[in-house]
Amino acid sequence: MKRTAIFGLFITAALLASPFASPVFAADDEEDCASSLEALKDDVDAATSYIDKTAKVELEKLMGQAEKAQKAGNEDACNDAIEKANDVLAKAQEGQ
Image 1 (tube, one colour):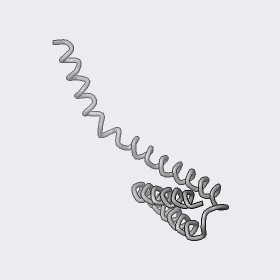
Image 2 (spheres, rainbow, N blue to C red):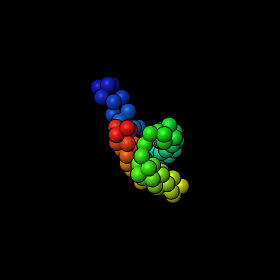
Image 3 (tube, rainbow, N blue to C red):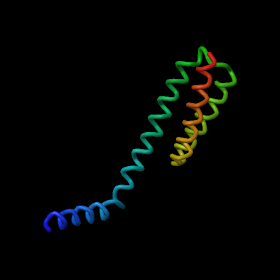
Image 4 (cartoon, rainbow, N blue to C red):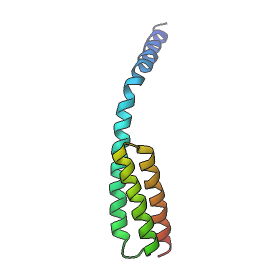
């Protein structure tokens, strides 16, 4: 009986605390977007000597979209642009 009561209290506390946890995850998303964008820039800088001009233009466009989305607070759009840019970079690296 004690285990059931303790388990019930634990579940109740977790459910009550869940709405307060959302801002923590949002901050993590911001950091993820910022750190992913920084890592992408580093990768592009390292690869500029051997990727073609078309890929460079596409990467610059996508990084610009990611930066705009980040400044606007749209983390989903930022992450989408970064993901697309990583795909373009990977394809460009395969073709080297």
